[in-house]
Amino acid sequence: MSFPLLTATAVLPAIGAIATAAVPAAKRTAAKWLALLFSLATLVLAIVVLVRFDPDGDRYQLTESHAWIADFGVRYELGVDGIAVALIALTALLIPFIILAGWHDADPSPSSQHRSSRGGTEETGTEPTSIAEGRWRPTQGFFALILAVEAMVILSFEATDVFLFYIFFEAMLIPMYFLIGGFGDRAHEHGEKAAATQRSYAAVKFLLYNLAGGLIMLAAVIGLYVVAGNFSLTEIAEARANGSLDMATSTERWLFLGFFLAFAVKAPLWPLHTWLPNAMQESTAPVAVLITAVVDKVGTFAMLRFCLQLFPEASKWATPVILVLAVISIIYGALLAVGQRDIKRLIAYASISHFGFIIMGIFAMTSQGQSGATLYMVNHGISTAVLMLIAGFLISRRGSRLIADYGGVQKVAPVLAGTFLIGGLATLSLPGLAPFVSEFLVLVGTFTRYPVIGIIATFGIVLAALYTLVLYQRTMTGPVKPEVAAMPDLRVREIAVVAPLVVLLVFLGVYPKPVTDVVNPAVEQTMSDVEKKDPQPEVEAAK
Image (cartoon, rainbow, N blue to C red; front, side):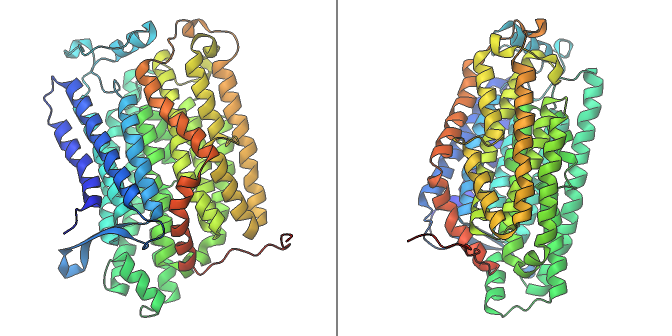
Protein backbone atom coordinates (compact mmCIF):
# COMPACT_ATOMS: atom_id res chain seq x y z
CA MET A 1 0.00 0.00 0.00
CA SER A 2 1.44 3.35 -1.04
CA PHE A 3 1.84 6.20 1.42
CA PRO A 4 -1.39 8.27 1.59
CA LEU A 5 0.29 11.55 0.68
CA LEU A 6 -2.89 13.55 0.13
CA THR A 7 -4.37 12.44 3.44
CA ALA A 8 -1.12 13.29 5.22
CA THR A 9 -1.05 16.78 3.67
CA ALA A 10 -4.49 17.53 5.13
CA VAL A 11 -4.19 15.63 8.41
CA LEU A 12 -0.87 17.22 9.43
CA PRO A 13 -2.30 20.73 9.98
CA ALA A 14 -5.29 19.16 11.75
CA ILE A 15 -2.91 17.43 14.17
CA GLY A 16 -1.08 20.73 14.50
CA ALA A 17 -4.36 22.47 15.41
CA ILE A 18 -5.04 19.95 18.19
CA ALA A 19 -1.47 20.10 19.48
CA THR A 20 -1.42 23.91 19.45
CA ALA A 21 -4.74 24.14 21.28
CA ALA A 22 -3.43 21.72 23.93
CA VAL A 23 -0.40 23.86 24.82
CA PRO A 24 -0.72 25.18 28.42
CA ALA A 25 -2.12 28.69 28.75
CA ALA A 26 1.15 30.13 30.07
CA LYS A 27 3.12 28.86 27.07
CA ARG A 28 1.79 31.18 24.39
CA THR A 29 5.13 31.60 22.65
CA ALA A 30 5.57 27.83 22.46
CA ALA A 31 2.11 27.56 20.85
CA LYS A 32 3.11 30.06 18.18
CA TRP A 33 6.28 28.18 17.30
CA LEU A 34 4.46 24.85 17.28
CA ALA A 35 1.84 26.20 14.86
CA LEU A 36 4.55 27.64 12.63
CA LEU A 37 6.45 24.33 12.57
CA PHE A 38 3.33 22.38 11.62
CA SER A 39 2.54 24.87 8.85
CA LEU A 40 6.09 24.54 7.49
CA ALA A 41 5.86 20.74 7.62
CA THR A 42 2.59 20.95 5.66
CA LEU A 43 4.33 23.15 3.10
CA VAL A 44 7.00 20.46 2.68
CA LEU A 45 4.31 17.83 2.01
CA ALA A 46 2.58 20.17 -0.46
CA ILE A 47 5.88 20.56 -2.31
CA VAL A 48 6.20 16.76 -2.42
CA VAL A 49 2.68 16.58 -3.93
CA LEU A 50 3.70 19.19 -6.52
CA VAL A 51 6.89 17.32 -7.40
CA ARG A 52 5.19 13.94 -7.67
CA PHE A 53 2.35 15.27 -9.82
CA ASP A 54 2.81 14.61 -13.54
CA PRO A 55 1.01 17.24 -15.65
CA ASP A 56 1.01 14.85 -18.62
CA GLY A 57 -0.28 11.91 -16.60
CA ASP A 58 -3.79 10.88 -15.56
CA ARG A 59 -6.32 13.57 -14.81
CA TYR A 60 -6.54 12.68 -11.11
CA GLN A 61 -3.34 11.47 -9.48
CA LEU A 62 -2.14 10.34 -6.04
CA THR A 63 -5.65 8.96 -5.63
CA GLU A 64 -7.01 7.35 -2.47
CA SER A 65 -10.32 5.51 -2.17
CA HIS A 66 -11.81 3.82 0.89
CA ALA A 67 -15.31 2.77 1.86
CA TRP A 68 -16.90 5.15 4.33
CA ILE A 69 -20.72 5.15 4.48
CA ALA A 70 -21.34 2.22 2.17
CA ASP A 71 -25.15 2.17 2.55
CA PHE A 72 -25.34 5.64 0.98
CA GLY A 73 -22.55 5.26 -1.56
CA VAL A 74 -20.25 7.69 0.25
CA ARG A 75 -16.54 7.01 -0.08
CA TYR A 76 -13.40 8.65 1.18
CA GLU A 77 -12.01 9.53 -2.24
CA LEU A 78 -9.16 11.92 -2.87
CA GLY A 79 -7.33 12.92 -6.03
CA VAL A 80 -5.69 16.01 -7.48
CA ASP A 81 -5.48 17.53 -10.93
CA GLY A 82 -3.21 20.39 -11.92
CA ILE A 83 -5.62 23.07 -10.69
CA ALA A 84 -5.96 21.45 -7.26
CA VAL A 85 -2.19 20.98 -6.95
CA ALA A 86 -1.56 24.68 -7.67
CA LEU A 87 -4.12 25.78 -5.07
CA ILE A 88 -2.87 23.34 -2.43
CA ALA A 89 0.62 24.75 -2.95
CA LEU A 90 -0.75 28.31 -2.62
CA THR A 91 -2.58 27.43 0.61
CA ALA A 92 0.39 25.69 2.18
CA LEU A 93 2.66 28.57 1.14
CA LEU A 94 0.51 31.33 2.61
CA ILE A 95 -0.30 29.78 5.99
CA PRO A 96 3.24 30.15 7.48
CA PHE A 97 3.27 33.81 6.44
CA ILE A 98 -0.20 34.29 7.91
CA ILE A 99 1.00 32.80 11.20
CA LEU A 100 4.14 34.96 11.23
CA ALA A 101 2.17 38.09 10.38
CA GLY A 102 -0.32 37.38 13.16
CA TRP A 103 2.39 36.57 15.71
CA HIS A 104 1.09 39.13 18.22
CA ASP A 105 -2.52 39.48 17.06
CA ALA A 106 -3.89 37.26 19.83
CA ASP A 107 -1.62 38.44 22.63
CA PRO A 108 -3.48 39.33 25.83
CA SER A 109 -2.76 43.05 25.99
CA PRO A 110 -3.80 45.42 23.19
CA SER A 111 -2.19 48.31 25.04
CA SER A 112 1.14 46.49 25.12
CA GLN A 113 0.85 45.79 21.41
CA HIS A 114 0.18 49.41 20.55
CA ARG A 115 2.90 50.79 22.80
CA SER A 116 5.57 48.60 21.28
CA SER A 117 4.37 49.31 17.75
CA ARG A 118 4.52 53.05 18.17
CA GLY A 119 7.65 53.05 20.27
CA GLY A 120 9.56 50.96 17.78
CA THR A 121 10.44 47.98 20.00
CA GLU A 122 9.40 44.41 19.30
CA GLU A 123 7.42 42.58 22.00
CA THR A 124 9.24 40.02 24.07
CA GLY A 125 8.08 36.68 25.35
CA THR A 126 7.05 38.26 28.65
CA GLU A 127 3.45 39.34 28.18
CA PRO A 128 0.95 40.57 30.77
CA THR A 129 -1.23 37.80 32.13
CA SER A 130 -3.74 39.50 34.37
CA ILE A 131 -7.10 40.66 33.08
CA ALA A 132 -6.42 44.07 34.58
CA GLU A 133 -3.48 44.54 32.22
CA GLY A 134 -5.49 43.79 29.11
CA ARG A 135 -8.37 41.75 27.71
CA TRP A 136 -7.52 38.03 27.60
CA ARG A 137 -7.17 36.63 24.10
CA PRO A 138 -6.49 32.88 23.83
CA THR A 139 -3.37 32.78 21.68
CA GLN A 140 -3.41 29.01 21.34
CA GLY A 141 -6.95 29.07 19.97
CA PHE A 142 -6.11 31.68 17.35
CA PHE A 143 -3.31 29.66 15.78
CA ALA A 144 -5.14 26.35 16.20
CA LEU A 145 -8.10 27.73 14.26
CA ILE A 146 -5.84 28.88 11.42
CA LEU A 147 -4.38 25.37 11.10
CA ALA A 148 -7.88 23.85 11.25
CA VAL A 149 -8.97 26.05 8.33
CA GLU A 150 -5.88 24.99 6.38
CA ALA A 151 -6.70 21.30 6.88
CA MET A 152 -10.29 21.73 5.70
CA VAL A 153 -9.36 23.85 2.68
CA ILE A 154 -6.75 21.32 1.54
CA LEU A 155 -9.24 18.45 1.91
CA SER A 156 -11.76 20.46 -0.14
CA PHE A 157 -9.21 20.74 -2.96
CA GLU A 158 -8.45 17.02 -2.74
CA ALA A 159 -11.93 15.50 -2.41
CA THR A 160 -13.34 13.71 -5.45
CA ASP A 161 -16.40 12.43 -3.58
CA VAL A 162 -19.09 15.11 -3.75
CA PHE A 163 -20.44 14.41 -0.26
CA LEU A 164 -16.95 14.43 1.26
CA PHE A 165 -16.27 17.76 -0.44
CA TYR A 166 -19.53 19.16 0.91
CA ILE A 167 -18.64 18.23 4.51
CA PHE A 168 -15.37 20.16 4.49
CA PHE A 169 -16.79 22.95 2.31
CA GLU A 170 -19.22 23.64 5.16
CA ALA A 171 -17.03 22.65 8.13
CA MET A 172 -14.46 25.36 7.40
CA LEU A 173 -17.13 27.95 8.25
CA ILE A 174 -16.94 27.13 11.97
CA PRO A 175 -13.28 28.00 12.63
CA MET A 176 -13.62 31.01 10.31
CA TYR A 177 -16.62 32.22 12.32
CA PHE A 178 -14.56 32.19 15.53
CA LEU A 179 -11.55 33.80 13.85
CA ILE A 180 -13.69 36.70 12.63
CA GLY A 181 -15.87 37.10 15.72
CA GLY A 182 -13.37 36.26 18.44
CA PHE A 183 -10.12 37.70 17.11
CA GLY A 184 -11.11 40.85 15.29
CA ASP A 185 -9.11 43.96 14.48
CA ARG A 186 -8.21 46.04 17.55
CA ALA A 187 -8.11 49.30 15.57
CA HIS A 188 -11.61 50.75 15.93
CA GLU A 189 -12.48 54.41 16.12
CA HIS A 190 -15.51 53.85 18.37
CA GLY A 191 -13.90 51.84 21.15
CA GLU A 192 -13.73 48.21 22.22
CA LYS A 193 -17.45 47.75 22.88
CA ALA A 194 -18.42 48.97 19.43
CA ALA A 195 -15.63 46.87 17.91
CA ALA A 196 -16.96 43.72 19.60
CA THR A 197 -20.45 44.44 18.27
CA GLN A 198 -19.16 44.96 14.73
CA ARG A 199 -17.06 41.78 14.90
CA SER A 200 -20.07 39.76 16.01
CA TYR A 201 -22.17 41.24 13.22
CA ALA A 202 -19.52 40.46 10.59
CA ALA A 203 -19.05 36.90 11.86
CA VAL A 204 -22.77 36.13 11.94
CA LYS A 205 -23.29 37.65 8.49
CA PHE A 206 -20.42 35.55 7.11
CA LEU A 207 -21.87 32.40 8.66
CA LEU A 208 -25.49 32.99 7.60
CA TYR A 209 -24.65 33.81 3.98
CA ASN A 210 -22.41 30.78 3.58
CA LEU A 211 -24.74 28.44 5.48
CA ALA A 212 -27.65 29.51 3.28
CA GLY A 213 -25.63 28.71 0.17
CA GLY A 214 -24.52 25.44 1.73
CA LEU A 215 -28.07 24.33 2.52
CA ILE A 216 -29.09 24.92 -1.09
CA MET A 217 -26.07 22.92 -2.19
CA LEU A 218 -26.99 20.08 0.20
CA ALA A 219 -30.35 19.76 -1.53
CA ALA A 220 -28.52 19.62 -4.88
CA VAL A 221 -26.07 17.01 -3.55
CA ILE A 222 -28.98 14.81 -2.46
CA GLY A 223 -30.63 15.33 -5.84
CA LEU A 224 -27.43 14.32 -7.60
CA TYR A 225 -27.33 11.11 -5.58
CA VAL A 226 -30.93 10.34 -6.49
CA VAL A 227 -30.12 10.76 -10.18
CA ALA A 228 -26.66 9.15 -10.27
CA GLY A 229 -26.81 6.61 -7.45
CA ASN A 230 -23.44 7.61 -5.97
CA PHE A 231 -21.32 10.60 -5.01
CA SER A 232 -18.13 9.82 -6.92
CA LEU A 233 -17.12 12.73 -9.13
CA THR A 234 -15.08 10.53 -11.45
CA GLU A 235 -17.80 7.88 -11.84
CA ILE A 236 -20.56 10.40 -12.46
CA ALA A 237 -18.47 12.34 -14.98
CA GLU A 238 -17.52 9.11 -16.77
CA ALA A 239 -21.16 8.01 -16.88
CA ARG A 240 -22.14 11.41 -18.32
CA ALA A 241 -19.42 11.12 -20.95
CA ASN A 242 -20.29 7.60 -22.14
CA GLY A 243 -24.05 8.20 -22.11
CA SER A 244 -24.93 5.69 -19.39
CA LEU A 245 -26.25 8.54 -17.21
CA ASP A 246 -28.91 10.51 -19.02
CA MET A 247 -29.86 13.54 -16.94
CA ALA A 248 -32.96 15.49 -17.93
CA THR A 249 -32.25 19.06 -19.01
CA SER A 250 -34.41 20.64 -16.31
CA THR A 251 -32.89 18.38 -13.63
CA GLU A 252 -29.35 19.24 -14.66
CA ARG A 253 -30.12 22.95 -14.60
CA TRP A 254 -31.65 22.85 -11.12
CA LEU A 255 -28.75 20.81 -9.76
CA PHE A 256 -26.25 23.18 -11.38
CA LEU A 257 -27.95 26.17 -9.77
CA GLY A 258 -27.84 24.49 -6.35
CA PHE A 259 -24.08 23.96 -6.63
CA PHE A 260 -23.32 27.29 -8.30
CA LEU A 261 -25.17 29.45 -5.76
CA ALA A 262 -23.12 27.98 -2.90
CA PHE A 263 -19.89 28.55 -4.81
CA ALA A 264 -20.94 32.07 -5.82
CA VAL A 265 -21.48 33.01 -2.18
CA LYS A 266 -18.05 31.69 -1.26
CA ALA A 267 -16.36 33.26 -4.31
CA PRO A 268 -17.94 35.97 -3.74
CA LEU A 269 -19.97 37.03 -6.80
CA TRP A 270 -22.28 40.04 -6.97
CA PRO A 271 -24.98 40.25 -5.53
CA LEU A 272 -24.01 37.54 -3.00
CA HIS A 273 -20.86 39.38 -1.94
CA THR A 274 -22.01 41.67 0.86
CA TRP A 275 -20.59 39.55 3.69
CA LEU A 276 -16.99 39.99 2.49
CA PRO A 277 -16.35 43.72 3.19
CA ASN A 278 -17.66 43.35 6.75
CA ALA A 279 -15.67 40.17 7.38
CA MET A 280 -12.39 41.61 6.08
CA GLN A 281 -12.87 44.96 7.81
CA GLU A 282 -13.43 43.44 11.24
CA SER A 283 -10.84 40.65 10.99
CA THR A 284 -7.16 40.96 11.77
CA ALA A 285 -5.09 41.39 8.60
CA PRO A 286 -3.83 37.76 8.59
CA VAL A 287 -7.38 36.44 8.97
CA ALA A 288 -8.52 38.76 6.18
CA VAL A 289 -5.82 37.18 3.98
CA LEU A 290 -7.02 33.74 5.05
CA ILE A 291 -10.53 34.64 3.92
CA THR A 292 -9.87 36.14 0.52
CA ALA A 293 -6.61 34.45 -0.52
CA VAL A 294 -7.38 30.93 0.72
CA VAL A 295 -10.99 30.19 1.73
CA ASP A 296 -12.70 32.08 -1.10
CA LYS A 297 -10.61 30.21 -3.67
CA VAL A 298 -12.56 27.05 -2.79
CA GLY A 299 -15.60 28.65 -4.43
CA THR A 300 -13.96 29.42 -7.77
CA PHE A 301 -12.09 26.10 -7.75
CA ALA A 302 -15.36 24.22 -7.21
CA MET A 303 -16.93 25.97 -10.20
CA LEU A 304 -14.25 24.40 -12.39
CA ARG A 305 -14.22 20.99 -10.74
CA PHE A 306 -17.91 20.39 -10.05
CA CYS A 307 -20.12 22.78 -12.05
CA LEU A 308 -18.37 22.36 -15.40
CA GLN A 309 -17.53 18.68 -15.00
CA LEU A 310 -20.84 17.42 -13.58
CA PHE A 311 -23.22 19.77 -15.41
CA PRO A 312 -21.60 20.75 -18.72
CA GLU A 313 -24.81 21.55 -20.60
CA ALA A 314 -26.28 23.57 -17.73
CA SER A 315 -22.97 25.44 -17.41
CA LYS A 316 -23.19 26.52 -21.05
CA TRP A 317 -26.86 27.41 -20.58
CA ALA A 318 -26.07 29.69 -17.61
CA THR A 319 -22.92 31.23 -19.09
CA PRO A 320 -24.45 34.49 -20.45
CA VAL A 321 -26.03 35.40 -17.10
CA ILE A 322 -22.92 34.45 -15.13
CA LEU A 323 -20.71 36.56 -17.39
CA VAL A 324 -22.98 39.57 -16.86
CA LEU A 325 -22.82 39.05 -13.08
CA ALA A 326 -19.04 38.71 -13.30
CA VAL A 327 -18.70 41.99 -15.20
CA ILE A 328 -20.98 43.72 -12.68
CA SER A 329 -18.69 42.39 -9.91
CA ILE A 330 -15.64 43.78 -11.71
CA ILE A 331 -17.03 47.29 -12.20
CA TYR A 332 -19.09 47.46 -9.01
CA GLY A 333 -16.24 46.27 -6.78
CA ALA A 334 -13.78 48.69 -8.37
CA LEU A 335 -16.17 51.66 -8.15
CA LEU A 336 -16.89 51.06 -4.47
CA ALA A 337 -13.18 50.61 -3.78
CA VAL A 338 -12.57 54.10 -5.19
CA GLY A 339 -14.93 55.66 -2.65
CA GLN A 340 -13.80 53.84 0.50
CA ARG A 341 -12.45 55.64 3.57
CA ASP A 342 -11.37 52.40 5.29
CA ILE A 343 -8.18 50.71 4.05
CA LYS A 344 -9.43 47.19 4.65
CA ARG A 345 -12.81 47.77 3.02
CA LEU A 346 -11.01 49.18 -0.02
CA ILE A 347 -8.97 45.98 -0.35
CA ALA A 348 -12.13 43.91 0.17
CA TYR A 349 -13.99 45.62 -2.68
CA ALA A 350 -10.88 45.31 -4.86
CA SER A 351 -10.98 41.56 -4.20
CA ILE A 352 -14.63 41.41 -5.26
CA SER A 353 -13.56 43.02 -8.54
CA HIS A 354 -10.74 40.51 -8.96
CA PHE A 355 -13.00 37.54 -8.29
CA GLY A 356 -15.21 38.88 -11.06
CA PHE A 357 -12.25 38.48 -13.43
CA ILE A 358 -11.67 34.92 -12.20
CA ILE A 359 -15.30 33.87 -12.70
CA MET A 360 -15.42 35.61 -16.07
CA GLY A 361 -12.37 33.62 -17.18
CA ILE A 362 -13.90 30.34 -16.02
CA PHE A 363 -17.16 30.83 -17.91
CA ALA A 364 -15.64 32.39 -21.02
CA MET A 365 -15.21 28.71 -22.02
CA THR A 366 -11.83 29.26 -23.66
CA SER A 367 -8.50 27.71 -22.77
CA GLN A 368 -6.90 31.15 -22.36
CA GLY A 369 -9.71 32.30 -20.09
CA GLN A 370 -9.67 29.24 -17.85
CA SER A 371 -5.86 29.09 -17.69
CA GLY A 372 -5.85 32.78 -16.82
CA ALA A 373 -8.56 32.27 -14.18
CA THR A 374 -6.60 29.47 -12.50
CA LEU A 375 -3.39 31.49 -12.64
CA TYR A 376 -5.35 34.47 -11.30
CA MET A 377 -6.39 32.44 -8.25
CA VAL A 378 -2.73 31.85 -7.42
CA ASN A 379 -1.55 35.37 -8.25
CA HIS A 380 -4.42 37.09 -6.49
CA GLY A 381 -3.67 35.08 -3.37
CA ILE A 382 -0.06 36.29 -3.34
CA SER A 383 -0.74 39.93 -4.27
CA THR A 384 -3.62 40.31 -1.81
CA ALA A 385 -1.48 38.77 0.92
CA VAL A 386 1.24 41.36 0.33
CA LEU A 387 -1.13 44.33 0.24
CA MET A 388 -3.33 43.28 3.18
CA LEU A 389 -0.48 42.20 5.45
CA ILE A 390 1.39 45.46 4.88
CA ALA A 391 -1.87 47.30 5.52
CA GLY A 392 -2.18 45.35 8.76
CA PHE A 393 1.34 46.33 9.84
CA LEU A 394 0.50 49.96 9.01
CA ILE A 395 -2.79 49.90 10.94
CA SER A 396 -1.22 48.27 14.02
CA ARG A 397 1.27 51.14 14.21
CA ARG A 398 -1.25 53.96 13.90
CA GLY A 399 -4.24 52.25 15.52
CA SER A 400 -6.62 53.37 12.78
CA ARG A 401 -8.02 51.91 9.55
CA LEU A 402 -9.09 55.28 8.15
CA ILE A 403 -7.16 56.53 5.13
CA ALA A 404 -7.52 60.14 6.28
CA ASP A 405 -5.48 59.41 9.43
CA TYR A 406 -2.31 58.83 7.41
CA GLY A 407 0.05 60.94 5.35
CA GLY A 408 3.76 61.12 4.62
CA VAL A 409 4.47 57.57 5.78
CA GLN A 410 7.09 57.04 3.07
CA LYS A 411 9.31 59.64 4.72
CA VAL A 412 9.39 57.88 8.09
CA ALA A 413 8.97 54.23 7.01
CA PRO A 414 10.34 53.88 3.45
CA VAL A 415 10.53 50.07 3.43
CA LEU A 416 6.92 49.78 4.56
CA ALA A 417 5.84 52.31 1.94
CA GLY A 418 7.86 50.60 -0.80
CA THR A 419 6.40 47.15 -0.19
CA PHE A 420 2.93 48.67 0.10
CA LEU A 421 3.46 50.25 -3.32
CA ILE A 422 4.55 46.91 -4.83
CA GLY A 423 1.46 45.23 -3.41
CA GLY A 424 -0.71 48.01 -4.82
CA LEU A 425 0.91 47.86 -8.25
CA ALA A 426 0.36 44.10 -8.30
CA THR A 427 -3.30 44.71 -7.43
CA LEU A 428 -3.70 46.97 -10.46
CA SER A 429 -1.94 44.29 -12.60
CA LEU A 430 1.16 46.25 -13.56
CA PRO A 431 3.15 44.47 -16.32
CA GLY A 432 6.09 42.63 -14.79
CA LEU A 433 4.13 41.56 -11.72
CA ALA A 434 2.27 38.26 -11.49
CA PRO A 435 -1.41 39.36 -11.73
CA PHE A 436 -0.80 41.06 -15.10
CA VAL A 437 -0.27 37.75 -16.91
CA SER A 438 -3.41 36.16 -15.50
CA GLU A 439 -5.60 39.21 -16.08
CA PHE A 440 -4.32 39.52 -19.64
CA LEU A 441 -5.14 35.85 -20.35
CA VAL A 442 -8.62 36.25 -18.89
CA LEU A 443 -9.35 39.30 -21.01
CA VAL A 444 -7.97 37.73 -24.19
CA GLY A 445 -9.88 34.50 -23.56
CA THR A 446 -13.10 36.41 -22.93
CA PHE A 447 -12.72 38.80 -25.85
CA THR A 448 -12.29 36.01 -28.41
CA ARG A 449 -15.75 34.62 -27.59
CA TYR A 450 -17.59 37.53 -25.92
CA PRO A 451 -16.00 40.78 -27.17
CA VAL A 452 -18.55 43.14 -25.57
CA ILE A 453 -18.06 41.53 -22.14
CA GLY A 454 -14.29 41.73 -22.58
CA ILE A 455 -14.39 45.42 -23.52
CA ILE A 456 -16.54 46.37 -20.53
CA ALA A 457 -14.30 44.38 -18.17
CA THR A 458 -11.25 46.37 -19.23
CA PHE A 459 -12.69 49.42 -17.45
CA GLY A 460 -12.02 47.53 -14.23
CA ILE A 461 -8.30 47.92 -14.93
CA VAL A 462 -8.63 51.71 -15.20
CA LEU A 463 -10.57 51.87 -11.95
CA ALA A 464 -8.01 49.60 -10.25
CA ALA A 465 -5.27 52.09 -11.12
CA LEU A 466 -7.41 54.86 -9.66
CA TYR A 467 -8.20 53.30 -6.28
CA THR A 468 -4.70 51.88 -5.82
CA LEU A 469 -2.76 55.04 -6.64
CA VAL A 470 -5.13 57.29 -4.70
CA LEU A 471 -4.75 55.01 -1.66
CA TYR A 472 -0.97 55.20 -1.89
CA GLN A 473 -0.98 58.95 -2.45
CA ARG A 474 -3.22 59.69 0.54
CA THR A 475 -1.42 57.40 2.98
CA MET A 476 2.22 57.47 1.95
CA THR A 477 2.93 60.83 0.30
CA GLY A 478 2.50 64.46 1.29
CA PRO A 479 3.36 66.14 4.60
CA VAL A 480 4.11 63.87 7.55
CA LYS A 481 1.19 63.90 9.96
CA PRO A 482 2.20 64.25 13.63
CA GLU A 483 0.53 60.93 14.51
CA VAL A 484 2.82 59.00 12.15
CA ALA A 485 6.03 60.96 12.73
CA ALA A 486 7.41 58.34 15.13
CA MET A 487 6.16 55.35 13.16
CA PRO A 488 8.81 52.59 12.99
CA ASP A 489 9.69 50.91 9.70
CA LEU A 490 9.21 47.20 9.05
CA ARG A 491 10.92 44.93 11.55
CA VAL A 492 12.82 41.74 10.78
CA ARG A 493 9.81 39.48 11.32
CA GLU A 494 7.63 41.65 9.12
CA ILE A 495 10.23 41.78 6.35
CA ALA A 496 10.50 37.99 6.56
CA VAL A 497 6.74 37.84 5.92
CA VAL A 498 6.52 40.09 2.87
CA ALA A 499 9.91 39.74 1.15
CA PRO A 500 9.40 36.16 -0.17
CA LEU A 501 5.92 37.07 -1.41
CA VAL A 502 7.27 40.12 -3.24
CA VAL A 503 9.93 37.92 -4.87
CA LEU A 504 7.19 35.52 -6.00
CA LEU A 505 5.18 38.38 -7.47
CA VAL A 506 8.13 39.41 -9.61
CA PHE A 507 9.17 35.87 -10.52
CA LEU A 508 5.70 34.76 -11.65
CA GLY A 509 5.22 38.08 -13.41
CA VAL A 510 8.30 37.46 -15.53
CA TYR A 511 8.14 33.66 -15.75
CA PRO A 512 4.66 32.14 -15.11
CA LYS A 513 5.51 28.92 -16.97
CA PRO A 514 5.96 26.73 -13.84
CA VAL A 515 2.31 27.33 -12.92
CA THR A 516 0.83 27.24 -16.42
CA ASP A 517 2.60 23.96 -17.19
CA VAL A 518 0.83 22.38 -14.23
CA VAL A 519 -2.66 23.81 -14.80
CA ASN A 520 -2.97 23.82 -18.62
CA PRO A 521 -3.57 20.05 -19.06
CA ALA A 522 -6.36 20.21 -16.45
CA VAL A 523 -7.87 23.18 -18.27
CA GLU A 524 -7.83 21.24 -21.55
CA GLN A 525 -9.69 18.39 -19.87
CA THR A 526 -12.26 20.81 -18.48
CA MET A 527 -12.77 22.28 -21.94
CA SER A 528 -13.32 18.74 -23.19
CA ASP A 529 -15.94 18.17 -20.46
CA VAL A 530 -18.05 21.05 -21.72
CA GLU A 531 -17.27 20.17 -25.36
CA LYS A 532 -15.94 23.60 -26.15
CA LYS A 533 -13.09 24.58 -28.47
CA ASP A 534 -11.32 27.89 -28.72
CA PRO A 535 -12.71 30.22 -31.41
CA GLN A 536 -10.65 30.26 -34.58
CA PRO A 537 -8.98 33.61 -35.35
CA GLU A 538 -10.65 35.54 -38.14
CA VAL A 539 -7.30 36.31 -39.76
CA GLU A 540 -4.74 33.55 -40.15
CA ALA A 541 -1.19 34.28 -39.08
CA ALA A 542 1.28 34.87 -41.89
CA LYS A 543 3.41 31.83 -42.73
